[in-house]
Length: 224
Image 1 (cartoon, one colour):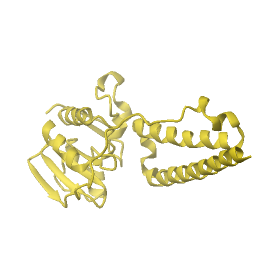
Image 2 (cartoon, rainbow, N blue to C red):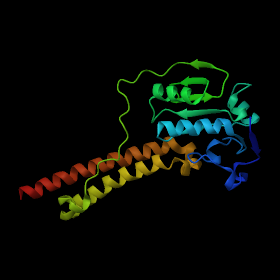
Image 3 (cartoon, one colour):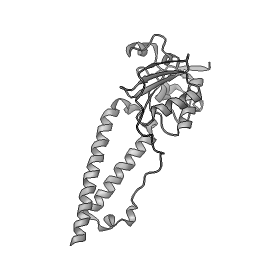
């Protein structure tokens, strides 16, 4: 097993990192910043990311001995070998995720539906926990969102509150997409994701409310 240890993830040489969809900070110990680069495990998580074609939000990867104790991890946790990953299921169908994870070579599986993540590791072959409930409908294929052509919009041309509303709603949509596509860039904010989630929900609701007002404003203009 080819592994390299670093006292801190910032010590990883730029040219030594070859997993494009993950960063050293993302897989380093959350408690200490230490990092054990397990190349076999990282190759598999990158292969899983490539096969699924959508971001993997890493809740936990490598753990130092002291941090593993602090969080109540198993004494022989694969996290301490850099060979385990806890992946959030918010943007994945757990059944499809598990199937592809097995195909790329993960052997150990832990299911945590109440906490919203799945543990995968390099083995030995085993599984534990309560399986995720079967989804009523599968995730739809991800396609670029359909956006209103703002330059041709009567709402934009009319200006006023309606124009501002259209821009506001589109801005919220763009911000949410950028956040999902650039998760690696917000790793320092991971402890605040719950707060950020509520902020985006509030922004989205505000955008919807203002858009409704704008459409009513357009309708009234059409009646005059």
